[in-house]
Length: 121
Image 1 (cartoon, rainbow, N blue to C red):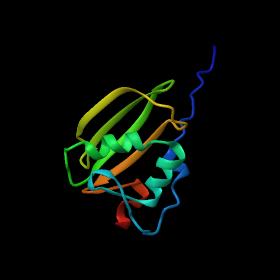
Image 2: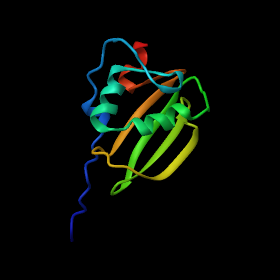
Image 3: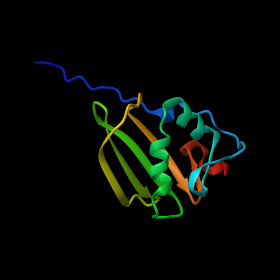
Image 4: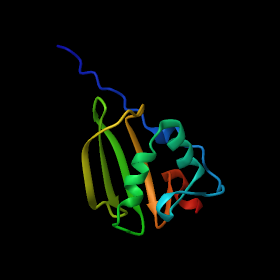
């Protein structure tokens, strides 16, 4: 009998989890501001096009939780939920060259931040 090997998923949030103090916000497109943590991930991992999708989406809940998850190979799904867990968008089959298997980003009004930064702003 063969053992089932489970692949360990790598999360960008685990690597970028050290933003624990408020820092200067950075002006972004569409009237949004982003945190230093989001800016660093955007620069290091080249995900500004994903941030653009998140910022342009007009659901405008108090808090939106966006999860970018690898499905297979370079295909990802971008899904958005409100703070109660109700999914309001699911965009599968986005082809992207992203090292990590997932990333969670929060949108709070006109601010985009990492979950670890949520209560800092």
